[in-house]
Amino acid sequence: MSLKSSSKVLSFGSKKSSSAHDAAAKLAALNVLKSNVMIADEDLNIIFVNKNLLTFLEEAESDIQKDLPAFDTTKLIGTNIDIFHKDPSKQRKMLENLPEGYETSITVGGRVFGLIASPPV
Ligand code: HEM
Image (cartoon, rainbow, N blue to C red):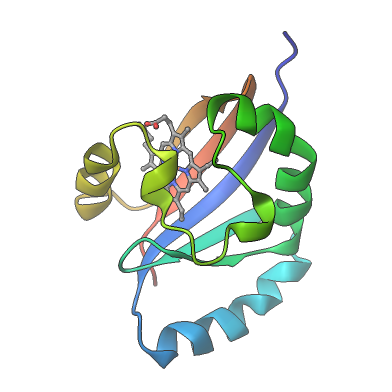
């Protein structure tokens, strides 16, 4: 099995009010970054995926679906991240007490993803 790797920066806990959407608009600047960025609000609904990550996920979609059949790149915005986590309470607990810039890697559909989780600044 070939392993491909990519890094993604995940942020979470952005306020749900319109300020979250203002922030998302500002973060549209992130679309020009080569990094992969995904942002979830305080309920852990995905509110932003930058272009680089979207392109990567479209390309990886069929592999990801081997482990996560519900994964659909076109429906990511608005989806709660819980549906992708085997034991969502584990991630929720981790995210509540996350050290600054938590780094790890996860394997999904035979691909290795570098992951940096970070609370909003
Ligand atoms: C902003 C959005 C997201 C955040 C903050 C987040 C956060 C996390 C965290 C903290 C972990 C635990 C890592 C560890 O155990 O050390 C994790 C694992 C994982 N995440 Fe996410 N995640 C997000 C979105 C997604 C999405 C969209 C997918 C779908 C591909 C996904 C799939 C997984 C998988 C498969 C694991 C490891 C296995 C598991 O525990 O279920 N995550 N995530």
